[in-house]
Length: 99
Image 1: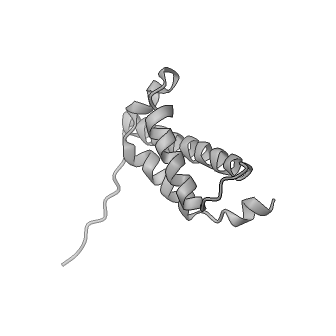
Image 2: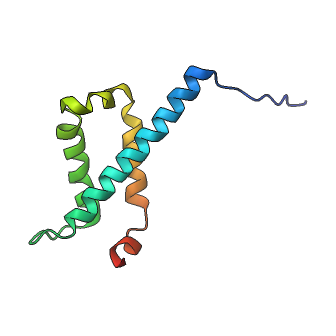
């Protein structure tokens, strides 16, 4: 038996969609990181980062995505922003906290 190696190439529309997904994921990651670092300075809130991220994800899906100026977000699949929040959860946030 032998294997045939093939390289799949994306057309212009698919390339544009992939770049849009990557940009949206980056935007959501930075949005979540900004809210998380801001929430560290709240007085009287003693939550772990995972609980804060759960609250930020709820704010993002229920409030931010429903605003008219963010209607473009509905063009992208939900797995894109979910993976951004997963990456944010797995990020080493201790280095950010020390800075």
